[in-house]
Length: 357
Image (cartoon, rainbow, N blue to C red; front, side, top):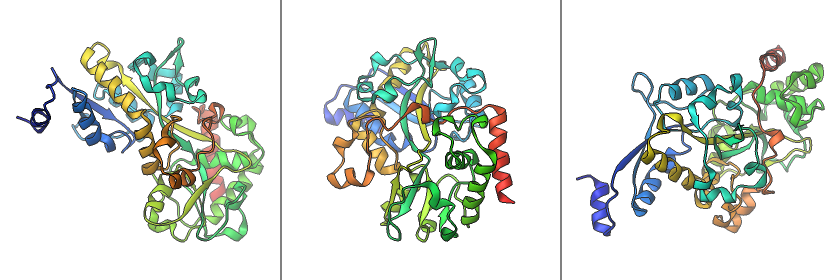
């Protein structure tokens, strides 16, 4: 007799008719960080749902690291739930739509808490149907170490000569740094996804300054030990959440020139389209991840901006000030990362390499 069944008996809750297992393919940590809490909540609702990590063809655990590998795992029917980045949906002719189930939002009570900018979004719309709901997001933004400096108003601090050795940025998604350079070169944040809108020479000069000020790059996220002596960093939010949890004092700002935004979503694999029980469990999980309580906790864990408007109700007054979510309409769709054509992708890669010389 498993522990879940024993727990049900002790609580006097009727045992679910069937045990359901959902395989999760995610950017590491998003959903499976809530595995224990979710499974306990499901039990309290009379459901026996177990979350597992997806496995690759060698039966090894697998996470999302890029579009192609994610697509291969999904196409191999090795995942039930997946968390694609919003720009993935229309990449390579929109082939991702072919292996997902359109989302029936009427089955999700918590979509009512999505802000208008996300509830009416178009990034995942095909044939007038949505294929996902938002899960987690934020800006590829500017953060400052309040132990050393006051809040900057502009991206200019990243390339200013006086900040040499005090700056860090990622070297794993170089186009995101190119977007900052393009914005500083005068391109509207909504227009950085087409190289025709970017002044190459001006953007190169900005990026050269940024690279010249950076002595160490970060990969998936900046590490707290490295951040102690930095003054300014670019960040998805993850690094500053980790550093602040260790007692540092990092804050994010919205530069006056604007910024680009990232959004990761949650979707259902077409492999469970005809499995009524699994499909029901998938919707139950998605609604749980959209709850104000979970979204509030994701901000604490990842430094993200909630995708629902009621998350702030679950923060302390100190947290509301620290997280500084200034508007329910933070997610301006035009600023969300978009799929790049080959020419634009090559443009930003070339810009990055030229700035290194």
